[in-house]
Length: 288
Image (cartoon, rainbow, N blue to C red; front, side, top):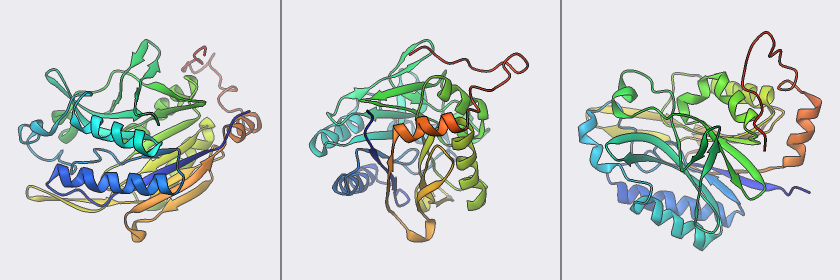
């Protein structure tokens, strides 16, 4: 029998120029999520850096970290102390390449790898990079995977990746029950469209959705990046079950996810199983 998962979307204030101070703020909100009883928390895209993608890449290369760097290690210690799991988006350096990535840290502080169609993935990397800004900052990821966190299976779509329906289908095919969507910026959408997009993808794929954005401005060089908030939790039926609007400012939004309810929703609306793959080839389920 599955148990309920208390999941938290952490809506951070816009990041300042000091990464160390940004980390301290993120850690403070993670402590608040743990105090509220969360089992799993999600931070926004590039959680401890301002959204620097409009700047020259060379100006920010020094802030990128490897998977075994100080940033991951700091939050591993904190997760172990608090007994909370964390989806941590970060600016990753891997050899001479740079990625917009997300790592999963378990409640014991250990890094949890994802499993994709072609083997283990230590982290999930953003696949689709809007040109020209992000395309010159990052290398694109090469695939999606699903993390197995105890009895919960979850995937991640980093910001722009949510735009592509085939990404949602692929995560469902790989067995995801929950899809995390870390966001930064305003994305050019109305609030209604943004929330409706998440609700639609959740229902048509039978997955719960956990999304976290920052709120407020970030000053990067001569530009200002506006973050609109709207961190939220959507159930597998597409219902918005928890939300922190931009007007509410930084904070934690928390809700319960029930894997048994996800399974029941899929039986009620078997859209994934009833696809006409003879006419429209798509991702086949991965054997678990």
